[in-house]
Amino acid sequence: MRKSDYKKSRRKTPWDGSIDLNPTQAFLKENYDVRYNNHHRKVEESGEAEMVNSYIPAKCPFCGSEKFKKSGYTDSGVQRYKCICNKGFLPTTGTIFDEHKLSICEWMEYCLNLFRHVSITADSWNNKNAFNTSRYWLQKLFLTLEGVQDNIVLSGTVWLDETFYRVRSEDVEYNYDGSKLRGISKNQICIGVATDKNQTIFLGRV
Ligand SMILES: [Zn+2]
Image 1: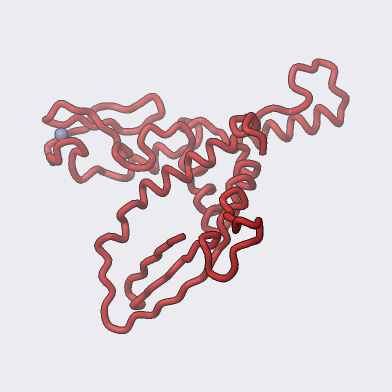
Image 2: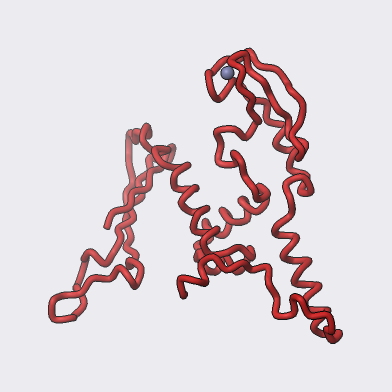
């Protein structure tokens, strides 16, 4: 992929700006636009405010106090809260959905694709997002999951297994003579999984 393609929006069609479309072009453009807009609905149109509002914060994300009260709604219909520490917040404050511009449905679709091993490139085409957006979401997801396994302690009988994946083609290293590294090498990422059937941890190492 060329660098300039990374930011390329998937909104455009070859017929944008044309006023004299034939019936086939008009049909294709209209249907593409409907699908694009379905994937990029504004938060206030997606109906997610109701879902978000069903989560009542247990404490203020800034000071931890439980002394806060309702304080109106955002333009999107999301409940605002105001704490005695004088800070305002939403049910999504401090979560992965904080300040999100895209609907939670899109996030969900992205995660489902990821868990089914859909590549970032394929996902950006499917969800009609720029490649950089899909890559940014991946980094955001990893940051959210960082440390999530830190406190897991396996006990009793533990089952372990590992598998190897090749690194990206641009990261492949070669011997001085240009030949490929053989066997288990830096060109493979080892993914280990361990479980005691109660809890499971995943480890990845190059
Ligand atoms: Zn507070």
